[in-house]
Length: 569
Image (tube, rainbow, N blue to C red):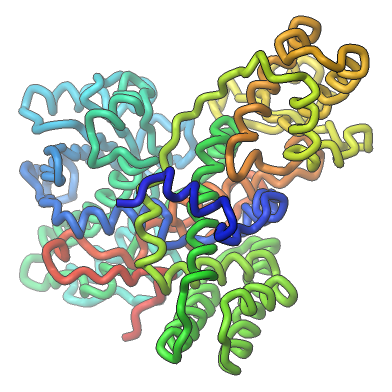
């Protein structure tokens, strides 16, 4: 069994694997150009569920003819039993609101340890539908809610009740029957914190595994519910959904600024995620043999990505231009590969010279797809402890050298330039979501979140240079006695220096900052597809589209739902 120590050894020494450099990978725009891959959390979760043959089935099914009521799934995972509890309630159209400030939803749900009895279900019923206004106990470790798709939900029911399959093109315009509006975990609202989940619930002891499982279950319930309602409406003419259409239907999601601070506040974790992805790429470039079969597989995957991008619908002009460029990039890569390739490094170099960042990173995802034997084991190393320990005995001059080597990107930013410090981040009391403000709002700036890492490094460095000039042999501890306000950023600098990939290299205070890159980065690690920005602050996307169904567990498993395509009819 491979250990993280063995992985670290493969990154050092004379035979070190060729990782892409930190200043290339951790550039914010490149991070925002990542796509789903074999190492995305949805893919790793589904592989685990199917390879371990989890047993998942409804143990309580109390829905009326209109689909309202309670459903409980019993989940027999590899190491323990869990319950997935869903409450389906009537919601008028004028009450349906996807914003985090909503107070009612079509569905609310909870993932719970162990089996649940009637008394506990009633306890959940009194709190789960209230979401933030309710409270649960530590048996619960994921809480979520969802709303029906106005375009697809009733349309699918109408067709099935009349004995017809829905038009796949209309399904493709949306891609889902429900969309989530929030998925909560890690100790919020009384739930079990991550430390408990990681130690006690090993089936979900990977980052966001519980949250991804809830979305997977929501997707499967949505298919069950529409068939139930259609059958109750007209039992004599009802037909079930076609299997290929079921596979194509995913779960919708809207993600806003709430996700952005996570990437800044968990730098060691994000560095680890990036490290595993880059190590997978390095393995493929070094160890991935190329023959005619591999080239044919490459061409097929590139063509699939091309078709997937062409099928992606967005009204956003910025993303439309990005998609047009990706399509052009993929056509170039297909033409180049048709001529024959004998080296992955040659193909990577070609992409870096002729393709956009999104095209380059699409190629990375394709390359990882071809070699599961080199990639999949790295999914076990996505966890790390977020410990920012101070080293007080480090010579102050050494600290200065670390900043010059690892944070040269921050030192190269002109923070005195117009607009370089224009933006600040804060949490809105009214909306309970992160927001961007202008420094001209003096009162609001007092509530800013500490996300300006680059600027904090710059200020620390200026003070450190002055101190080292005057006290060249002193320690970091003595420096912090003189400048105590920089203690936090010093801890971060020292600890991130131990990471293969360090901090995200961007000035998040700049007036032209694009938070969309932060959102895209995290969503790519989740494994979403079909990005549809609604502004520079939030994006719609689709989850689990093309994934196998619960009814497929136990059958031959084919992990082939990368970049799903509309079924042909």
